[in-house]
Length: 139
Ligand code: CMP
Image (cartoon, rainbow, N blue to C red; front, side, top):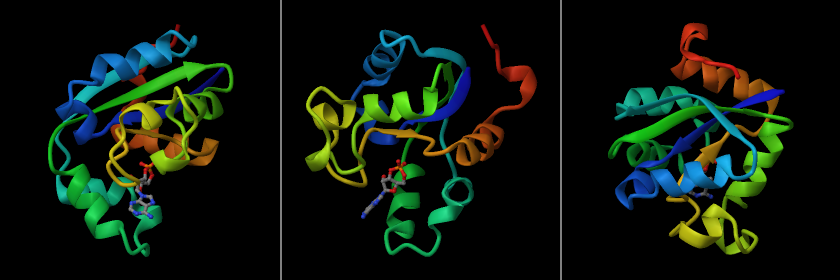
């Protein structure tokens, strides 16, 4: 079993896509083991995305991520990190496969509806950024 951190971003929450995103994970055998809605401050968004702090899009990304509420969740399943990324599709929706969340709903490379951890190391950091052990309910 593997855990990963996913976020329905402010554009996904604003478009009433919380249920759609959860449905796509759950129908693929990925279980939700922790979940919360949170409106990130700019500083909290910067802390979450600190690995991207040197990137030219960092300011815009953290403005966007603090522009409205998000749904943050811990997902669990066999190879959850890679499977969640496959369900989401490529970061740039123009490059995403048909039937993926980003292909179906994302408006651009930044406002791409959903986030998922990209490695075990980032999953550990990202899960710990939002949840403590007592809040994660393994099946
Ligand atoms: P995410 O999977 O959350 O990881 C980092 C985020 O930065 C990414 O999704 C996009 O929202 C954003 N991002 C990545 N690359 C770019 C880019 N070239 N321009 C703007 N935003 C980007």
